[in-house]
Each structure stands twice: as C-alpha cells, then as structure tokens.
Image (tube, rainbow, N blue to C red; front, side, top):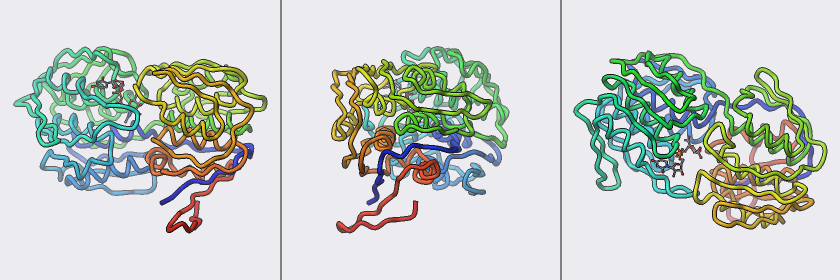
Amino acid sequence: MEKLVINGGNRLHGEVKISGAKNAAVAIIPAVILSDGVCRIENIPNIMDVILMAKILQEMGASVKVVDKSVIEIDPRGIRIPVATYELVRHMRASSYLMGALLGNFLRAEVALPGGCDFGVRPVDQHLKGFGILGAKHSVEGGMIKIKADKLVGGHIYLDVVSVGATVNIMLAAVKAEGRTTIENAAKEPHIVDLANFLNSMGADVRGAGTDVIKINGVKSLRGTTYSIIPDQIEAGTYMTAVASAGGDVTLKNVIPKHLESITAKLREMGVVIEEYDDSIRVVREDRLKRCNVKTMPHPGFPTDMQPQIAAILTIADGTSIVNEAVWDNRFRYVEELRRMGAAISVDGKLAVIEGVDQLEGAPVKATDLRAGAAMVVAALGAKGTTEIEDIQHIERGYEDVVGKLTAIGADIKKIETANDQTVQTAG
Ligand code: UD1
C-alpha cells in the first residue's frame, strides 16, 4: 500500500508543465477502434486511466506501441470481436465509451459496465436513447450491455440532460452512420471539441462541437492519423488551487487559458493574481484568500471536477462560502476528511457551507475518489504540519507524477510504501 506524506507550509515557486487531458484521452483512445489504420496520439498523459484504456484495446486485439512517455501508436485492425468483458473494464470508469466506438464500427457492442462511482449513480439512459434513435437495440444480460443494429442511420437526438458521456458515445456511434445525426443540448467541454477534432483528422465530418448543437455527417470509413491531445484543464486548475493554498508564484506551462476561464474568475474573486499568456498562466497568491460562492455547471460553467479542490481552499478563506454541486448527487464525501484537518464545513444535500478558518492542520486522511484525493493534496500543502493521504491509487488515475511536479516547485511531498506496519520510502 502506498500513501502520500505532505509537510505543509512551503510556498510554491517555479514552473509546472501540465500534461495532456485525461478526459480527452479516455475518449480518443476508444475512438481509434473506428479507424482503418494506425493512429499516433501525442501529449498522452502518463496516468493509470489512460494505461488501462490502452490495455483494454490491446487485450481486445489492437496493437499498441508506446513510443515514449507521452506518445502511443494504436493499430486497431486486430480487433475482431466487439466484446469488452467485466474482467477487462472493471477498473475503468470511462469504459462506456467502448459502447459507442464498437457499435459505430461493428454494428454490435457488448460491454460490461462498472457500477456506480464514489459520487453517485452513473446512469447511461441518454447514451442508450441516442443509440436507439440511430437504429440500435439494447438489452442487459448478465451484467453486460448488449447493443446491436442492422445498420445505423443518422437521426435527431435531444439530450434530456447535458451529458459528456452521452455526447461522446453518440458522436462515436454516428460518425460512420448513414446520413446526418444532430445532437441537441450537447455537452460543450473542451474534451468534446478535442474528440471532434480527432475524428475529423481521421476523415470524419463533425461540426459544431463546443456549441450545444453538434452535426455529424456520416462517412464510410476513417483513416489513421497523428493527433496531439489538448492540455488537461482539471490538472491545471488543481495546480492553480495548490498555489492558492500554499501561497507562492508558479507558472503553469502547456495550458489553454481559455479553458481555465471559470476557474481563473473564481480564484481572482478570492484574491489570487493570475496573468494569462498564449499557452501558460502565472498564478500568484500573497494575501489571505477571500470567500466566494461556487456553483458547478456543465462547461463553460465551473467544472464539477474542480469542486473538491476549490472547497479545500475555501476552508482557509476569510468569511463564509457556499458551494453548490449542481452536476452530481453525492460529491461531498471528502468533506469528512477535510473536517479531520480542522475545516468547518456543513453539508445539506447539494450545498456545502464553509466557514473559513485561519489554517488547517495536518492529519491522516483518505482519497475517497480522484478529485477528492486532489483536494486532500491541495489542503495539505497549505496546512500546518504533516498530512498522510491513503488510497492514493485514486489520485494516480488522473494525475501524472504529482510527487515530481510538486517537489519541483518546492513542496515537501513524498510517496511512502507501507507494508506490515513498516514504513519504507520509495523514490518520488
Ligand atoms: C464526465 C467526466 C467526469 C465529470 C462529468 C461532468 C469523463 C471521463 N468523465 O463524466 O469527470 O465529472 O463528465 O463534467 O469525461 N446523466 C444522466 N443520464 C445519462 C448520463 C448522465 O442522467 O445517460 C447525468 C449524470 O447522472 C450527471 C450528469 O448527467 O448528473 C452529468 O453526467 P455526464 O456529463 O454524463 O458525466 P460523465 O460523462 O460520466
């Protein structure tokens, strides 16, 4: 078992290079299934979710070549059977994207779905509604969702909720369907645009990604391509909150400042100074943070995947803040962990009321999920004393080399292996 040990209080200084976007990579890798040739994907983040997704394709028959830490080449032509068993997908929450990609390519998909995640049930009704309008039928047998169609024909799909996953899956299923598919009330996240750009680089005709109406004109085939993934909005946002927590002056390289606007706006409201450049931002925090209210919303609103991290810094802001989680039902499980560090937070349904305290104190805590784990790191960096974070496998699903990147800007953070009550330090 491994844990992170952080001695808080060091101000952060220097530069951090942000990796490629996790949520784009886990959509683009399955999208490779639709191509007739080798796809070279660059700026791939070296994180567990991406390694697992590539492994799933490999075990299904694709050939996967790791060119270097951030470049892979995938040849999907060895995939013959469109089935992803529970054994393959059980650790991978984004495995539902295999449904759209396999259906789009083979007119058939059998994918085991992992259950609900740590912050609520993850329904796929909108995904299935989309497949149905394109002409597919589905059934659930033995924990597998089985979907098939004689042919896929474009249609008009209105999403009842703005869903990233349903938008991705319908794009994947529709890209080689006959005729035009229109998705209304589509998600507008940067990774939706990145997926559309990737598909178009393979010869697809996807228009309007980034707006709430996406139009897809089906094409007969897609070719191999070379594509570079966008920088990770949430990793960048997490480092922005890390600087806000610990104080200091850090430049984040390899970012798209436009993707960070909602996060930048909130941090500025809290008194953090942010300078924007073409592909970098400078984050400076000197004085005590000010309170603010935050409501999560689909893009371009404040991202739910940044909610735990901003809550972590509101715990030490001057005054009372209200955080409204409007995307997920149960995304405040980490609050109990922050309370252990001295945070004053009360939760009522989708609202958290945070009374700012002067400083948090280090404590043993758990990463209850990926972004909750990030919030623990952020809180620990500004806290007095030592915080030990358990269950860090959640953090490693989505953050590349968090120890190396934070150490380089002056944090005191180590990964420790614990075995038989003996504590052994491993290289960061
Ligand atoms: C993606 C992100 C996740 C992020 C979320 C919201 C990836 C791999 N994951 O998850 O990190 O927190 O977007 O930004 O990109 N819903 C339905 N029916 C459906 C689908 C969704 O009711 O068929 C609801 C969900 O319960 C949730 C809301 O819609 O309340 C948003 O979910 P969705 O955008 O689909 O999230 P994911 O794609 O699973």
